[in-house]
Image (cartoon, rainbow, N blue to C red; front, side):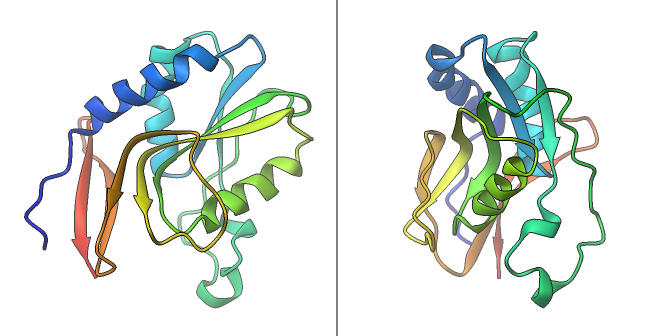
Length: 168
């Protein structure tokens, strides 16, 4: 395991909110991708605008590796209590790695309507390993991570979020 420590998740969420705030409009909605993106969006929501509509998105059926890995045992419901059509979607994920999860999320969103725009916000932009031409509009931190490691966002029992490096 790499001994370099990761920043505090709450600090990254505040930094991310500061970067996003200037672009929030009355047309903005916040959508967290299950699971870590939902946790991050829950923390971002009151910092951005507590009245802004928000929801959650499960991309399990939209993944391009669905046939290889099968259905994830923890499929969560998608909850979008607003019209997607014409909205400015602020899509939130915990770690941007290959770009494949974000592609799946965009496909899922378009099944609910055609947004005016989709902007991506991530806690960690894992640089150098992208497989698709997808980039974050807002990132708490851009970080080069060895190919032998993953970064996971963990929600502790008390609701606090923590970033953790995991060796493969």
